[in-house]
Length: 429
Image 1 (tube, helix red, strand yellow):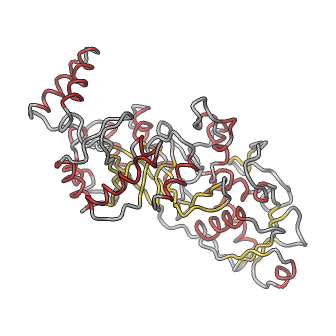
Image 2 (cartoon, one colour):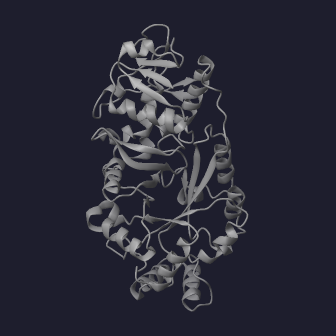
Image 3 (cartoon, helix red, strand yellow):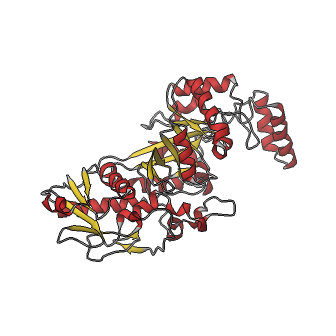
């Protein structure tokens, strides 16, 4: 067991040390603030404080993990062994920056709680993030730091064996915001879609809509029966998130009483794990919609729903996650940017979220999503999946995951030979 001495044990220290050592590296450790206990320990030990007690393995600390609340951080990013780092400390330390404070800053989304980085609409602007501005958005920086930390510690302590990496995992999410594009829609919505196409002189869309409505073609979003073909040669078992709500002032939806939709959800649940894709209403005003959506979905599937996802967030993540905990969700897949490829929390590893407002760890596991469909389509190039494969092969830890999200419309069987979809099929193999 690794014993860690620090002059003050705080909730932040307990949280980040547990995540790095136990979750990411599978090392047992214990914290102590008693010098005599630390000195008497005969196994591997390290100190985390402003200066070493003696000649032990010391990681010089920054003040962040001993603070409370949100305090403006003056960050300077520099290069350390070929990767970005910040919170520079003692150059004589085995690692010359506070890896624990820096990891906490990124995982807690500390910068997203800063009023300075919010737009006029009060939500976080991704282009203002440290990762975007410093060019490491596509790097799982926390994972890379932790991997290097383990290597340094295994050289210093004979009790810690060199890291043996197993196979990382790819994960796939299928969002179903609308099960049908043209079918099973209300007359008014169908008419509105038709008139908009006429106004924009989009004759192809008019033709497609009429072909579906007159049953000459299948609905382009109704791809569910073809999923077995898509994943025939893949070992990925997607997680499927359905939006299950009636239309509101915020968005159009398929009626939850539609029998075809209900049949699809039940059949999908026989083969895949199901989660709830939160509507805009339940996301912005959970007290009005979230309980009803979850209750209705569970009533249909006869299963507890513990997974949630919000494709595009309009509120601060900490507030969203607190609401999800209140409604007894255990796993969330919203940690990503809808229109950018990269790691929003600079990690590919699942982690429990830390609530900065109340200074404690939430019982909600956050699963980072590196790319959603809008970002995959943005480049209009099949090379996007080659880039994702490169990122996947560079993930350093067994605990790492590379998760992407597409929609049911992306899996239209008629699109299987398009360059982007062909690259997708190669990727999921």
